[in-house]
Structure formats: structure tokens, C-alpha cells
Picture 1 (cartoon, rainbow, N blue to C red):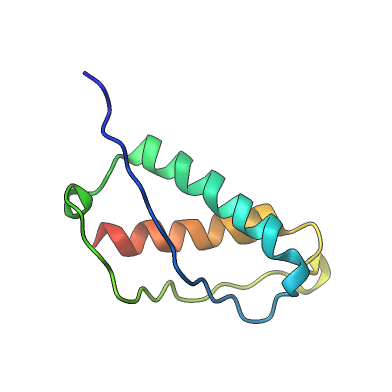
Picture 2: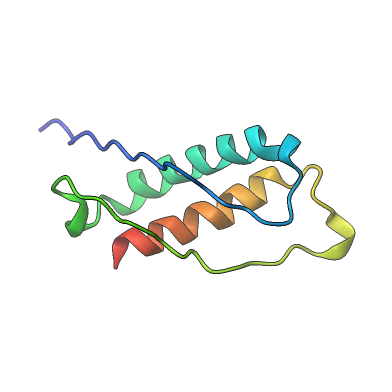
Length: 90
């Protein structure tokens, strides 16, 4: 049986407090982690049909002060992806 295709379009992603220059690395990390989460956890029942979610509040997270933003894109992307996955799984 062939797995179903999932197309997830995020029109706008707002990340306050991060330099715009880090956007590309953060987006890549989010995409990678979302792919992993959907592969491991499956597609939530509510996403089995085409639908639109007007707004999803993923909450907030903190990075240790000493880590700074630079080099943290995988962690930031992982946090954001997990929030998105939790939000669409409700």
C-alpha cells in the first residue's frame, strides 16, 4: 500500500526575536523536523482531508542565554515543528 501524500503549506510563519538572516536555516530545520514527525507519528485524522487552519498558535519556547541564536537553527526548527505538529494533531 502506497502512503498518502501530504502537502502542508505555511503561508506565514512569525518568529519574534530572531534575525531575519537566520530565516532560511530555521525554515529548513522546520521542514526537516516536520517530515520526520509526520513519518514517525503519522498524519493526524483531521488532516486526512483537505482543510485550512486559519491560525495556529504554537506557543513559545526559550533558548539558553549562552547559546545565542547562531547555530541554534536545528533546535529552533525542532521546537517550531513540534508546536505545529501538536497544533494540527488537535
